[in-house]
Amino acid sequence: MGEQKVKKVSEEEMLAEADKQLEMIKKVKEGMTEKNEKPAVAKTQKEPQVLEQSSVRGKQKRKSSAVLRDEQSKSFGDLASAKKHSKSTSKKTKVDKKLKKPKVRSKKYQEAKKLVDVTKKYSIDEAIELVKKTAFTKFDSSVEAHYRLTAKKAGKGKRIEIIRGLIEMPYSTGKKIKVAVLDDVLIKKIQKDKSTDFDVLLATPEMMPKIARLAKILGPSGKMPNPKSGTITTDPKVTMKKIQSGRIEYKSDKSGIIHMMIGKVSYDKQKLIDNYKALLAKIGKDKLQSITICATMGPSVKIEF
Image (cartoon, rainbow, N blue to C red; front, side):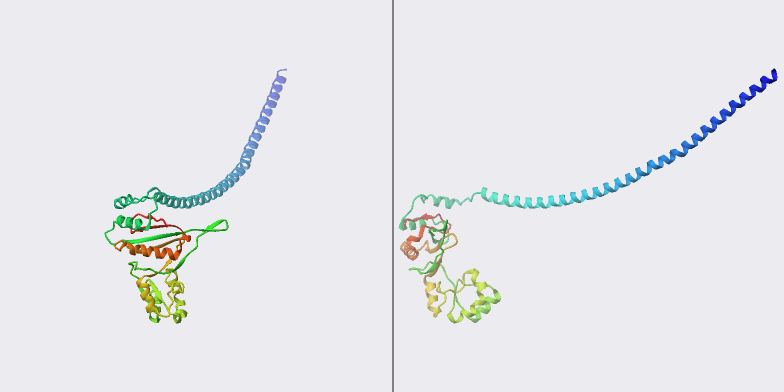
């Protein structure tokens, strides 16, 4: 009986040990599979992350470069607009400064202006006397007459007619006029120097074909010989004497005003009146809106005509 018990125990133990060994083998196998599976899973997880990160970095770089370009273009555009704005503002400020700062006249002018009633129109006798009183310059001032033309109706708006012509004043205006007669030598000089050191240029009809070369030089300065102004003549010497003695050309500007010098402050009053009336008769009262006279740098005096 004792021998049998020993055998049974040994068999159970053997079975238990076999079970333990099987479990150990299973555990070892499971551990091996886990070890083998984990790195495979990690690899599969890491690879797409790396790819995703690289693609994201590339996109970020592309975006950043595009953003930088946009920012640079915006900055350059902002700088250009800022420069334009600064220029425009500087121009505006200059204009504003000019508008804000009123022109301040001298004390002498202000004292002279007190003698003239701005709301009143004076007779030519009274006006000449006032001009003589209000002349405050140290030199012999010129007496200037300004004839404003009336604007004519043209369609919906108004049009100012340009008037020009010649007049022989009864007395000299006191202005020294330098007169030149055109010849071949003078033509070469004008072409070379491109300057005109004369006030009036006279030409004979025979010289007119040659004068076409000087049109670009003489035209802008208003010194081109013209039949209307009497500067094309068959006898230049006689015409020169007439011009120097008081024969002058009058012409209205773009605003419709004829500015003329009628003499000097030192002249006798009657000479100034005669010169004024001669030009008034030449233009015609029906074409005029207003007339004012003044001395150089002096206040203007309105005239009743």
